[in-house]
Amino acid sequence: MSRTTRCVALAATAMVGACADPPTSPQAGRAPFALSDVTVDVTGYTPTLLQIDDPTDMNDAGHVVGRRTNDVRPYLQEGATLHPLTLPSFALSATPKAINNRGNITAEVQKSKTVVRGVYWTSYQALPVELPNLGGTTDRPEDMNDSGYVVGSSANSAGIWRAFRWRLGRGVTDISGSPNRTWATGISNQGTVSGYTTINGSRFPFALFGGTSTVLTSRMWDKGIGVTPGGSVILGGGETWASTGQLTMHGPGGGFWLTDINAVGRLAGYMGPESNRVVVTTAYTWFNGVGTTLRYPGETSSKAIAVNACGSVLAAVDVNGAKQGVLWTKATCDVGTPTF
Image 1 (cartoon, rainbow, N blue to C red):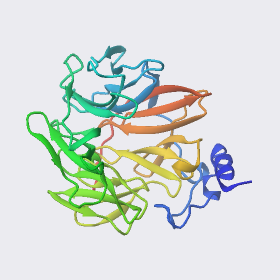
Image 2 (image 1 turned 30 degrees about the vertical axis):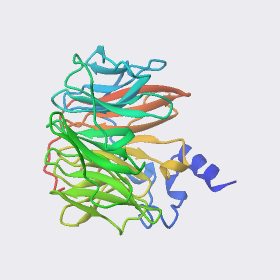
Image 3 (image 1 turned 90 degrees about the horizontal axis):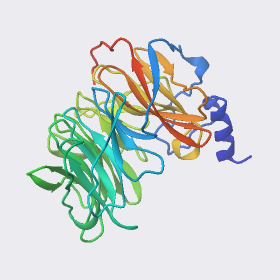
Image 4 (image 1 turned 60 degrees about the horizontal axis):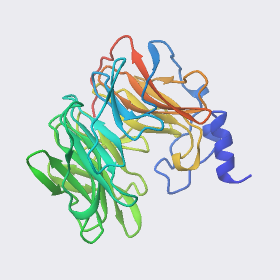
């Protein structure tokens, strides 16, 4: 049995601890865990099946953006109400990437088979605004803060990927800080930016702390995937990276892959061996030492992709090959004081 096949089989039985990560993994050396290793608290969450099948983000009000199966349009779901967004005239399809607490939305739009452009709506009722680029033909927005600053990656005139920051009326800025290929993935309300860069063919986490670009060379192959409300960069391997340089490990152990952290320290992510080696994962959340597996009835695989200020978790679920969006709502909001 190949390592890939073995990892998939182990993940399907939640025996993630039996599949070791390679030496270059961001989780190398981290103690593995299985479901039996943690306290599982399934109370306090109520799942709601969304009309959006392919969710991508959620704000603190629980408003969700994403796509529907066999539909090229982007959507906003607000409670039980589904709102289609107006597509640009040149769009073949659009995938929302972020929604902030003001209701601004950004998305990547397929303009042709080879060209992708970023767009922005001030609300779901507004007409789309096309983002400027850095001289190339393709740009991909990834995140947006409550001030409306959008970050992502844009190809320059030489075809080199660069991290960008944009705000309506203020133009686009290259924030890469070096000539290396760089991608931005998240931005906080304070302006801290997360991302990753390549150096001599290897990938490293990238951050913009207080206007200064920094590369975390001690974490080869990991990447910044977002920013905590406190301004620390979230690393996919389960750590946060503060502007002081401090690295803090979070969650239950190896095999937990972090995707988001809310304002009081609740983690969202998924369990399973390395994400690019497995197709079976389970949505998971962790708060104050208590883990919760979020399994929707009939699911074959799932990932928690966002957690809001209250602690509600947005999950992308696979049910026998069919995509489903599920919102796990908390009856009582989280309370706490995180240190990151």
